[in-house]
Image (tube, rainbow, N blue to C red; front, side, top):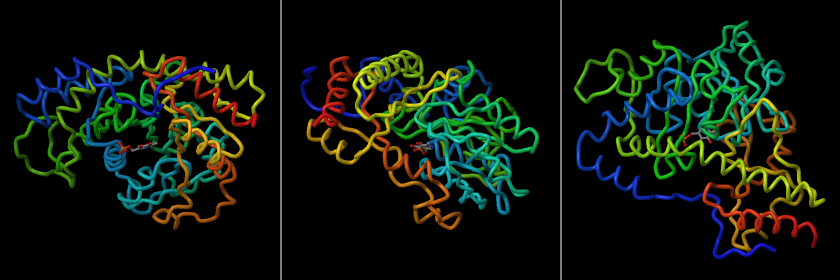
Length: 372
Ligand SMILES: Cc1ncc(COP(=O)(O)O)c(C=O)c1O
C-alpha cells in the first residue's frame, strides 16, 4: 500500500512568491476595485475562453444574476435548470422574479436536450446547462433547440473553467457563460466570478448592472444610473491573483486529469463496486471534481475520514428537496436519477498538488473498504 504523511485535503491553496509579489504590488496602489487588473483579467479570461467580453463580478452567483437581468428575464418567465446543482442557480432566477423549473439529469450528472424538452412550455425563456463536476454538457442539441425556440442559454461553468466541448471552451457556446472562482480552479483564496459573452450589447448591460446601472466598463467616477443595478464589483486583488493563476490553469487541469486516470485505472482493475465518472469522447473535462458512484457511500466517506482523507458530495440535498425552492416542484419521484446520484456520489480529493502516492493511497483505501 502507498504510504503518505498527514491528512489528504480535498482542496489546497498554494500561495507562492509570484502570487505574494502580485498581491503586494496591487495593495500598494489604488484603485482596489474597478481598475486595470479587473479590466485585464476580463480580457484575458474572455480570450482564454475563445470569446470576446468578460464581466468580472464578486461571485459566480452575481455573474448569473447579471446574465439573467441583462436579458430581461423576469416575472412570468420560466428558466430550466437541473435539480442536482448548487443553490445559487435557482436563487438568482428567483431574485429576478422568474420561475426556476427543476429537471432531472442524465447519469453523468448533466442535463441534455431530451431532459430539457420534457419541461418546455410557452413560458420557457432560458436554459441554464450546468457543466457538473467539470464535464461539459452536450451543448449542440441544446443550442439547436434554443435557436428553434428563441431561448436564452446561460452556461454555468462554475465547475468547468478550461473544459472543452468538441474543442470549444465551455462558456463560449451559450449566449453567456459564467465561472465561479470561490474555492474553484483559479482564485481559490477568495470570492469572485466572471460572465463571458461574444455579444457586445449583452456585455455592456452586464458591465452596467454590476455597478448601479451606470454606463461604464471600469472606473470609479460617479455616474447617472440608467437602469436598476447593484454593486457587484470584484476586487483588484482577486483579479490580479486570477490573472496569475489563469496562466497556470491548463497545467493544473492536466494534473487533475492525470489523477483521474490513476483513480480510473486502479478502480477499473479492482473489481470493487465503483462506477467511474461518465465521460464522452467529445469532452475534455476540467476534472474539478472526481466523482464516483458507490454503494454504502456514507460509510465509505466516514471510513476515509478515519484514514485522514477528506471527501465531499456535490451535492447532498437536491434543489427539489430544499425549502427555498420547493414551490416549483416537490415530488422526489420526478427526479429518479438525481435521487440515486445524491445517495451514491462521492467526490474524492483530486487537486493539482496531490502526489502520485497520495492518489494511490486514496484509491487503495476506497478499494480496501469494499474488500472488508
Ligand atoms: C454549479 C455552481 N453554480 C454556481 C455557483 C455559484 O458560485 P459562487 O459561489 O461564486 O457564487 C457555484 C458555487 O459553488 C456552483 O458550484
